[in-house]
Length: 316
Image (cartoon, rainbow, N blue to C red; front, side):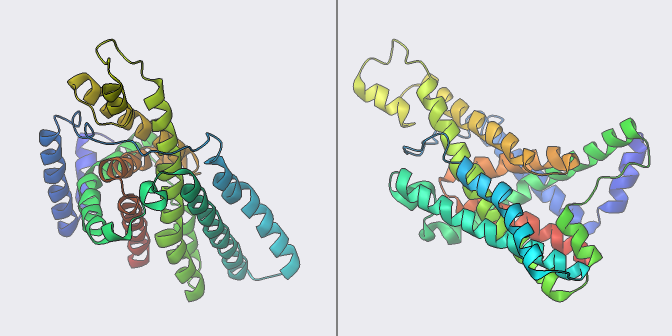
């Protein structure tokens, strides 16, 4: 596939509304790059979230979802006996949904116990929901062209390596929607993908892992000689920097925590072909959390993206 083939492919997959969306997103992304000096100053004023979270705590809800839930699904399957194919898929999805909700409640309990200002310090302040909803839509629109470009580049590289017949596999839930037309199953999948999964994954990877990583990085920075007074040292640790070097450290801490938590985020997704695009999306969600301090913003971005993918498959 050469450059002309890529252009032809883009012409086939991007209709006029899609082209308008991409151009609008590119414009917004370009404005952001100019205003933030290519992102270098975007998180200079981002304040770390105060907490006393132990490093092992984020792994508790992770184990519940990825270890306890499969065991529960096997137990339920044995109790209910033989089911039809779609009923079995419905059962597995229902158990996964229930287990994810339980894990989400565990995260909320841990956040209340370990974050300063409890859930508000964690990023769950219902007063910010209206603003977060609309800003999340703009954030997703800004990063959408980048995510689509990474997807197309991944397909191009995959075909170069494995041949022209190589195709990127759809997400398992999207394959399930295509394979089974039963309404109860489709409603459950849409609810799980559009609501339950975004809430759980953002609370876990943004709220807990990203916060824990940034707190560790903030403690790891050496205090230089010019930061002599307790007030200046306290300002550095809380993100209220007085100097350019302190602002740069604050920004570096934030971006590095976003990169590491995004790497953890993509690794829990089975389809490796989606990892590059998911990493780009995850960077956007991590930035939204650090910039606003609100978890609702990345939750909305994640929900909008998942819902758009499901709707696109159903429309096709």
